Amino acid sequence: MARLLSAAPFRHRHDREIFALAVPTFFALIAEPLFLLTDAAIVGRLGTQALGGLGVAGQVLLTLAAVCIFLAYGTTAAVARKFGAGDIPGGVRDGVDGLWLAVLLGVAAIGIGWPLGPWMIDALGASPEVAPYALTYLRISLLSTPFLLIIMAGTGVLRGLQDARTPLVVAVASYIANAVLCATFVLVLDWGIAGSAWSTVLAQGAGAFWYVATIARAARRAGVSPLPSVAGLRSSASAGFALFLRSVSMRVVALVTTAVAARLGDESIAAHQVSYNVWALLVFAMDAIAIAGQSIVGRYLGAGDVRGTKEATRRMVEWGVLAGLVFTVLVFLILPWAHLPFTADPRVAALITASLVVVALMQPLSGVTMVLDGVLMGAGDQRYLAWASLWTMLAFLPFALVLPHLATSQMWGLVGLWVAFSVWILARAITLGLRARGTAWLVTGATRP
Image (cartoon, rainbow, N blue to C red):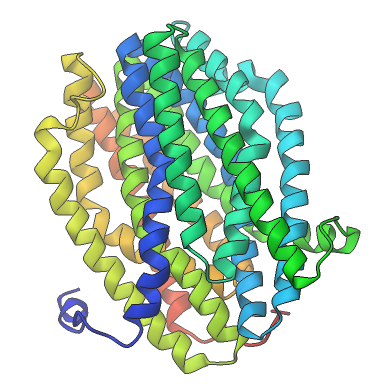
């Protein structure tokens, strides 16, 4: 790592294009975990059980979103390749079909999630005191799923077209709206945890409308019909299948950590909710470089520039390590006060502090992992990513199921769970690094066979 950092001067010919995409993407990405952290800070005023319910329901909703992440990532890679090859109408056509697919998947998610809500909450180990809060939040927030998926698809289209500013504007506006509405509904109108859920529905609905209007204008300029095409829907769905498998494997990891934390006690699941969202905030921040990598790598490979692809990849990995080191320092600096916005319970506060130590230490490795994941995503190497995610999930499970139960206290149990999570990050870094060192992923052209 020392050699890597010494080779990373703060001026590089690829820095301008990396940061032109990464900086606005950074602020857009952290808006989503800020949604959750703001909700957690406000809902935490309702008590430990309400905060735990938010954590359990949040994992279910994140799973529904994550298995459809190909709407953003797959679309970014496909549109960026066509942008690099000069086929703008083709890229917009892919984007329009992605929006229609998002609507269909969102409606299906509501139909599946509503009746299965109690079962999913029980499967995650929610206690009888936590479960009612979780079910209330889940069933209301499910109504925002089509909006969330439209936002994901629209984000992928615009990033593929090298536009990171519009997603930034939409994300920041949605975050502000959510924060204001959540505080009003929960603290002023006394709607309880349901108020937090309704604020998310309204804020994401407004964001989805913004994306639809923006891409409709782009379609008119490119001469592309706003209606869906059967071939396009089929192509979008089939191209995303490998990413679907990747996302399922990754969500199994998140769900297992939540289920284990819930079984350690109500205090543990409440603390885990906060620590996981802090980790997500930091990872989403580093994912800004990864998503810039999706756009840049897709554009370079679409234009047939293999050398530019390799050079940009190397530089983005360097920045990923540096960002991780900065976040390690920041977490340790805020550690004594990190629990204050979320809980007044000293037991939950101690658990938050202990688990955040592990979160801080894993940041440099997380930076490498996120960047390489984005690079291979931009190259359209989804099949490898799917298999790598499966094997790393299998490496994680024994640690997650054993380490917490070897502990002699609730605190060490939660720390053990986060150590197991770190093993998963390490396994991902190894599998992605080995792939990036080779050449099999460097396939050029407007489309990847």
